[in-house]
Length: 282
Ligand SMILES: [Zn+2]
Ligand SMILES: [Zn+2]
Image (cartoon, rainbow, N blue to C red; front, side):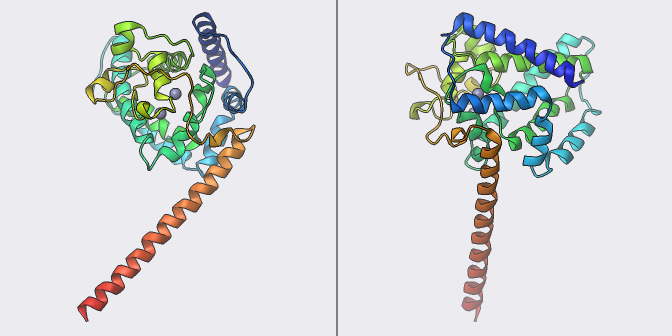
């Protein structure tokens, strides 16, 4: 099974690179950002990504996958045509993706999503650059639309391949806009590059993963005059070492440390307010 996945990924990657080099500038260069991307890619191609996800989510990935697996048995909608059900699945999925992507940009969750945004080179290689915690919850969002629409295994695989291909395509540095098609139907590489922009005017825009429609509906669409050459964030913390696992390890340590500090502060403020209440009632 992992061989089949690896085959598809190589096929999709080759196709994406072909498009990238056909339409974009051919400016491949080695950097720490690319090495991090390649670390992720090698874990995906070898199947080791599952083990690292379990390890760095402190085992949380296991029960989440188990619960997600039980959801697939219940559907509200049954459509005869496989292609129609794939289309409905992708439509519902794009809505779910829009909101879960917005969630990763909140103060609460940015800590994990910044790993994807810390890439300083824009290319299909960064497609699989995601924090294990983000990957852990992604399973839920992939499965969630199946509560609504029934999809055969083949339909689910086709939807997954289409989704994977589009995600790689939008990470090509081609600057393609695709006119009305890119404005309403499939988010263009240029629109998603704006989402990766470090510029202040591009903050919190273009959250759509496949369908830009939701950005229009919820007021986050941007295709303004300012176009970014660069991508990245203010502190590219995940490019400081040449192998991403070390970054994830340090990230987790910081997360645990910050969580304990917040809990400790909440605990101490509760104790203080209890004391104040007791003093008032005396
Ligand atoms: Zn994002
Ligand atoms: Zn991206």
